[in-house]
Length: 115
Image (cartoon, rainbow, N blue to C red; front, side):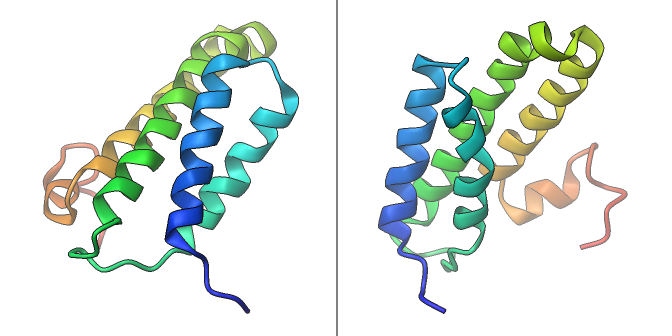
């Protein structure tokens, strides 16, 4: 198994975010969101790594872009109820990526989750 290059994943995250904002109805772009997030999840960085903050911010930006997708094209495709629920999930995910572990543990939406 090859190690995931953080620099490459950071590039992919930014590229997919940009493409999702430019062409939200492109099925290829929508299809790669999950795979690029999966690759980002395989990157192992410690908290003082120079790319750690950039990587977390890039993941959060992609989550926000997908939230916006659910509020636009997603609502047209799946209806307002499903779209609202999914947009909310992606917004929470985006905020969690920008928070420290302590902030996540103290947040009202995550206090019930054992860490």
